[in-house]
Image (cartoon, rainbow, N blue to C red; front, side, top):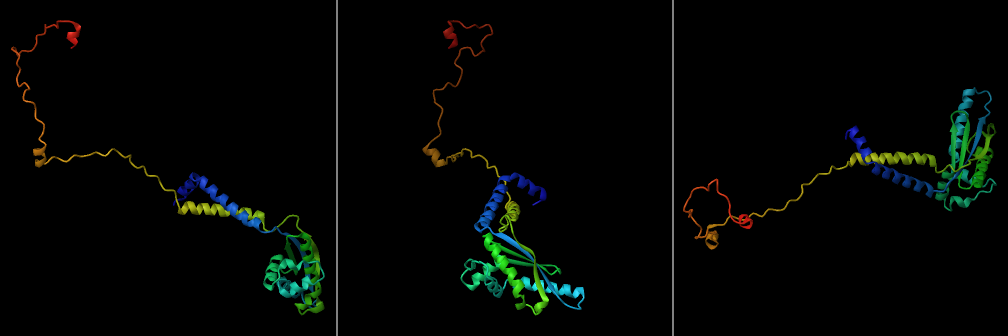
Amino acid sequence: MELNTFFHSIKKRQGLVAGIVLGCFILVFGLTFIQPLKYSVRSRLLISQNLSGADPYTVSKSNQYLSNLFSQVVYSSSFFNLATDAGYNIDTAYFGDTYKKRMKSWKKTIDARSIGDTGIMEIYIYHADTYQAQQIALAVNQTLMSKSFNYQRGGDQVSIAVIDQPLTSSFPVKPNIILNFFAAIFLGVAAASFWIYFFPERKKTHKPKKRDTLIYQPIPTEAAREVYPPAQAPDNLPTSDDRPDNSMPRNNWQPQGSIHNILR
């Protein structure tokens, strides 16, 4: 299909395009609002290591390594147990009653990111209850500052400090409604374009009007002619002009009699 024809088809079938886009909106936002709305709590930690006699590049790489290490450690089950036992008011029933459910819920609750080679780590906690999100964020920060030696060999040479206290978002951030809005538009336009391209509108063919069927009678055979002979002219028809004078009427002839006789 040529590009001009394709755009002409879109313009001609605007109702179909609007229906598909609206259907995608309903589908996307239906899936969006089925999920619980979650707030986020963001905190930032600085990881530094005291390496006497080392050059700044080595110290920077060491800090980057530790921040990457801790950003993966926080997803483990051992860290989950340390955080929930840190003495904060965390509702552990929220994470489920089996190991598989707890780990699945915990990985959806926490998100840790290492920022380049700065040694700074950002930690996000997602929860439907802002109070629970704050308690989990404080427990995670406290565990990293006091129990980090369980995951590295630096001992007292490694220090972790909170540079940004946990900050709760003003509005729910999960699911991302704005992102889903643009995703619905993109999905709707893509689906409508796919449908119009692969299922073009069929041209209507004008069928001729039905005419009355002509009935053709067969030509009578010799046997039919004998049974039904063709009609004959009557024998008493005149064969010649019996007027005494066969000449044409004269021009001076005038009709005589009453008007009734003349009209007849």
